[in-house]
Length: 68
Length: 256
Figure 1 (cartoon, rainbow over the protein chains, first blue to last red):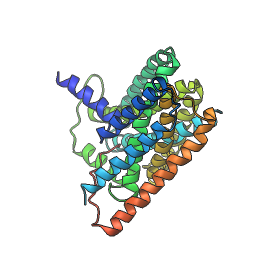
Figure 2: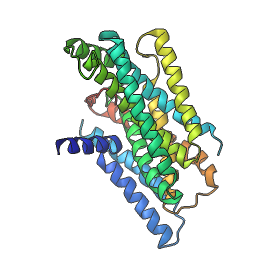
Figure 3: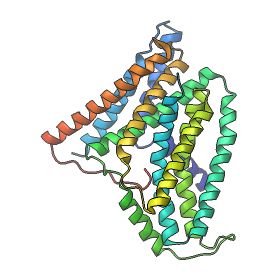
Figure 4: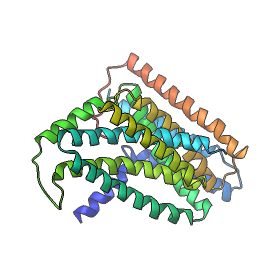
């Protein structure tokens, strides 16, 4: 059980890293893009880049604001 | 798209990881013994080769659209990690990755450890240190090679980029017999972060059903936009430092 937890923790750290909210924002951006494309028939190529750049700015803001 | 951006991205990413792995291997080999170090390194390379041989072709058989969605998401998250670290390092909020101090930390730990014979290996500490170092750094290389190679349907080009990086770093490491402190790792990591994030965003959106304006040529706009935004973030954090208190630094983990 402990080894399984360590294995899971390794892959979490490997993929998600220091800030889970970055991963959450990327997934949210992909979900919104898919909904816009398939449900609203909008070619929302701009949506994911906006989410990705916002995720970077948000994560940097959180990392530095708490360290002041 | 030509294979050149693919080869260059994989090459730069792999140089960064290979330099970090070299530091650990040198610390194990010089401080402990070379035979066990090479055994550990060899075992890690075998594991990495098996992972690549099994996972690469298996992923290649998946349909391209869902593959791009999942791989794009993973690559974007992975790239954003590199960018986040790179920006925090460039602005002093995180300590710069320093191969000289990483090497010293490994040497100090290696000198303090007892020598133990286990499973036919004459120095178990040197073996495990080299094995873990090469495996952990190598996993990032494998991840990049597989995701880039499969998405571009050109695993061969990705492997060429990775192999060239490993050969260059190994030959340089043998020549200087010291950690490669002159390699601008932090800036290279930032550049790779830009590439991984851009390609991840491009493939992820395609997987979600988007048709990019200009198809692959959209990358020629997306990459500079991500790079420009990253530079703006660095300027923004610098300006925050000027107007606010001196930043406290995040702790550094060896190999990160």
